[in-house]
Amino acid sequence: MRFTRASSAGPAPAGQGAPELAELLTASARGDEQAFARLYDQTSARVYGMVLRVVRDPAQAAEVTQDVYLQVWREAARFDANLGTVLSWLLMIAHRRAVDRVRSARSATLRDDRYAATQSDRPYDQVAERAHANLEAQRVHNALQDLTESQREAISLAYFAGYTHREVAVLLDLPLGTAKTRIRDGLIRLRDALGVADE
Amino acid sequence: MNDHELSTLVGAYALDALDEPERTLFEAHLADCTECTAEVVSLRAAAAELSHTTTISAPAAVRSELLSTISRVRPLPPPRAGAVTALNQRLPRRRLWPAIAAACALIAIATTGWAVQEHRQLTGHRVSPTALSSVFDSADLATATVSLGGSAHATLIYSKAKQRVVLIGQHIPAPPAGKTYQIWMLGPNGSAISGGVFRPDPDGTVLVQASGDLQHTAQMGISVEQAGGASRPTPGAIVADIAI
Image (cartoon, rainbow over the protein chains, first blue to last red):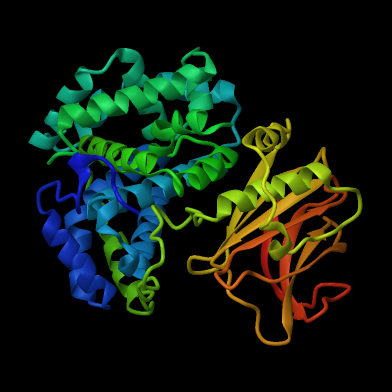
């Protein structure tokens, strides 16, 4: 699989410490448990924090995080640098698992979900209290301010609350086609503001 | 859903915000669309940045349990040279798209009674995306996915109202010599009705369809049986069951 976008040609370096993570992952693929432990130490706060935000329950977040890293250990040799950074791969696996967890557990009605969503419609403010007040977080907060409110809400409900775009449309009273457009446009704007693709 | 409509799902896909049937369709599309693939990669990178805002140290127990677990688990070997590396382990191979399309053609023409078609018989078929989406528009269309260990996955796409089910498998290992896979409709009271036998393609792809009374089916099961199949699942031979 090849990129067609010029800006993405070749393995995307992106992100501080990325080459280091790639080396640790390569060593992990060969069964180096120490390298894997270092990989875990450098990335687990990002993974666990995001998973916790999605599943909300610390016990479940711990379980999902373990599953994620177990999968990473087993599949380390399958990582493809052409498809993003190690961290992006890790977070993709983690997010998918976290979302699968909340969707399979979701027995509440949409009405209840709507209540939950109202309670969490300002996730960035909430999490900022708990999160390390670091520069990277501030940079992301700033970039999010460039999005329209509706884009921000749609992305937040999808990423941090694990809703499908159809559910997001219902929660935000948008026509179906609109939610997926808000999500896509918002992500593109976020990507460009953060310079993710060209780092 | 045509290619243009599919490409509008790219943002929702990058945030895991597609439901299961859409995800299956979109991943099939991704396998053939380098532009969408590049966009998914870049949007996923942007989404990954969001986790800077939620950083929290994991409990120490997670680390210690994990490290004690991995010492007993062998990492998988690298993928075969020349294999298309998936965006994730569920991404279907390039050829799965016509396979799904062919499956949908079969769904559309399936008659009553249980019948399983082998993938080999299907690959020559092609149907238009329009015919495809008309099948996927079934009001009660649902999917379920089960892992069969490693990267092996089986996904069921089914409609209870239309009494039809398609099984799509990826990276499914060949059954042992003299054995075959068999698919079952398992009732809540222990009943088991055979849906037929099947073999994966040499590359591990499985595509079979069956039809029957799904209203009284609690689970679909896959077992490994003697070649030719069994009249009931052999105890202990069920390798996967999927609640539907």
